[in-house]
Every structure is written in structure tokens, then in C-alpha cells.
Amino acid sequence: MQLQAFPCSPSSADQGIVHVPGNMFLVRHHLYKWKSHFRIDADGKFVEDQFFPKNLRSGRRFLRSIGASITCSNGIGKDPYILSNEKISDARLIYAVAPAMGHNQESHPESHFRVPAIVNALEKMEMTPKFRGSEIIELQSFKPASVDDIASVHARAYVSGLEKAMDQASQQGIIFIDGSGPTYATATTFHESLVAAGAGIALVDSVVAASKNRRDPPVGFALIRPPGHHAIPLGPMGFCVFGNVAIAARYAQRAHGLKRVFIIDFDVHHGNGTNDAFYDDPDIFFLSTHQDGSYPGTGKIDEVGRGDGEGTTLNLPLPGGSGDIAMTTVFDEVIAPCAQRFKPDIILVSAGYDGHVLDPLASLQFTTGTYYMLASKIKLLAKDLCGGRCVCFLEGGYNLKSLSYSVADSFRAFLGEQSLASEFDNPAILYEEPSTKVKQAIQRVKHIHSL
Image 1 (cartoon, helix red, strand yellow):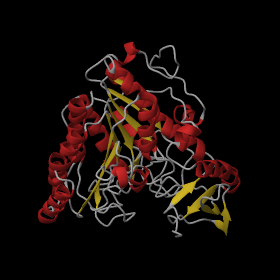
Image 2 (cartoon, rainbow, N blue to C red; image 1 turned 135 degrees about the horizontal axis):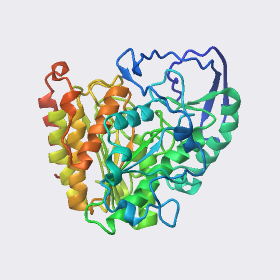
Image 3 (cartoon, one colour; image 1 turned 90 degrees about the horizontal axis):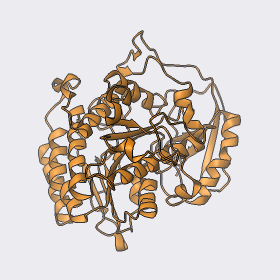
Image 4 (cartoon, one colour; image 1 turned 60 degrees about the horizontal axis):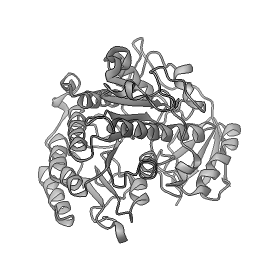
């Protein structure tokens, strides 16, 4: 199947289709004039209700992620990539930043503005180590994931094919991957995708290390891109290159002996890549809530796993218009009981913020308060079930303002602080949720999974 890439107004284009080494996918290549189509006012805001840091900070801080290693200023132990016990003894939240500044397509919603917008908001709200000391740690030193790490989820032919395609991307400026609906690549995509996956792995290491000495280890949050939950074992898909959360799940099993992994995906789109990676695996429970009928059209309620993995995949499509009431009920009646029955060793979260009512790519009615609720409940669930071990991975979220405020409120939840969602959310734009349809979906999934 060949899907058209997101439109982007090329100045000139070569419409040829070529095979990438590895023979796993095709690319169309285009040449572009890299001129900005964004209008930013003096305060660093998009004119059309978008948010972007006034200082892009595209220098050393963000471009550092392109290197093979990153200098840490927060203090480290003997291993330069592992935080010392002393440094994490008081931490309540550890996050890592991998913004993939070179992986960008002009006017694309999954842009290199996303992570800097979040970081800028965190600094503005004084939710960084600069203001919080040891309570919040930014994990600035981590290795990119290895090819072996990626190959624990993805076919080696795909991984090597993408790496070889970087030469073509360097020559052409950008390439589009046909059949991946729609995913682009630039000359830095391969390495920056390794860095993103590596950030998640490093956070797993840090959280697990802390859990050996504390009953309440810090929550980890990977502020990374490209996102990952659509990337299938054989290739990229839907803005996603490597399955970051899936790679971290396999790493947690392999490196730390955490056999049973519970993955919660609350992105507005079904995490089909994660779904496919573990569809027959009884030791990894994948639970996805997503908007019914949204991209990529997978994640039907009767898709429950197969073989030994039957029953360890739960998909709950929610009707358009579902919001805070629906998601609170879903958590209490579906997510929590599933996790309690599964008894995980660690909880990983595909944290997509594109279900927000202001997000342009879907039509749910989540609010900043919804994401605060989810973060609070997930933290408590991890504390009750798996020694507090929990790591979140940024997935979608394309209105930069709602994305930034919602991530910041998630941070507040993980810190045990009061939500400030009321300062951002506007109840006047919400409409009545489709409660009857939501109730029917919940009752059906509870019946299918004997909840």
C-alpha cells in the first residue's frame, strides 16, 4: 500500500521511487527550499494559537543530542551514563531531552518545535533542576541505543536499510517513505532516532536503580522525538521511526530481569506498532485507548492478542467527543483492574497528548486536567503494583501550547503537586460527552476481558 506523505509545498521535486538498501521500504525524494512559513510574535508565540520558545536554543544544548555522548552537569557516578545513588536519593522526577532538531519537515505537525516548546514551558513554570534542585533531575548523559537494542523489536534489514538511506537523505535534503503513512527522514534521522530510544533506555536504568534503594523511586519521562508507537517491526509508520517504548520494554526484560511489562498508551491514535510487536507475548501487556475510526484504523476492540499472548492486548476505541469523564471511568474500570490482575514489574507509558480538545489531528475532548488525572493515577498504580517503577515516553501532541501545558501538568502530578490546569483549560469550549456510547464500549471491553 502506498500512502501520500503530508503535503509540504516542495520548490522542486524528483518524483522517482527507489529501493532503500535492505529492501524493506521505498522512498520518494524531494528537494526543498528551507524557508519558514511560521509567523512568531515578539513573545515567541505563533500567531495562530501555537506556542514556541522565543529562544529556539538550536545551539549546543539541543544539538548536543546528535553526538555519540552527552556531557552531564547533574553529577554522575563511576559510570558516566549512570546517575549516582546520591544524586537520585531525593529525586521525584527524572527526565531526558532528545529533540531531534535535524529531523524536521517544513510545515509538518511532528516538527522539531515540539520538544523545545515543552522545555521552554517547563523553564517558564520553574519546573526544572535550575529551580527545583535535586527534586527534579534532567538526565543529560546517555548513550544512543545500539543497533542490537533496536533489533530487539525491529527487523535488522529495516535498521540497516534506514542507516544506508541517510546518504541519500543527505544529498536530497529529505526523503519520504512510501507505505509508512506518512513518515519522512532527513540526514540526521537515523542517529537522532537512536538517541531518542537511548534516552528511554537510560531512564529505565535510572528508575530501576533508584527502586533498589527506595520505595518511591522517581518517575521517568522521555521528552523525545521522533515518536515511536506506530513504527512496526518491519519499518516506520505514521511519523514514527523506531518503537521507543517497545525497545525499552525489551531492554527492561533483558537488562534488568523485569519480566512482566505493562504498557499504557493513551495517545489519540492506536499504537499499532507496539501492538504488533507484542501481540503473541504473554509477558507484555499492551493497553491502548484511542479515538474510534482514527489513524491508522487498527486497534479494534476484539483485537486481544494471539497464541500465548491472547488476552494480553486490550484495545479500547473511544467515540469522538470522549473527554475527562470517559477517561476517568476507563482508568478506574479498565486500566487499573487490568494492571492489578497482570501484576507487572514495571509500567511504561506511551504518553500522547493529541487527545487534547485543542489538538488539530483528532476530535476527543481531553483537557490539561485529564492528563493530570492520568499521570496521578498511573503514578499511584506503579507505586501499588511494581515498586513505583514507571517511565513515560512522549508520543503525539501537535498543538504546541496544549502539549506544553499538559506535559507540565503531568510533571506536577508526578511531583505530587496541585494541578494548574484551570489556568489553561477553557470549559466553555467543551460539549456533552457521548456517555451512552462510552458506557457501551467500556462494558463490551470488560466482557471480552472478564473484568
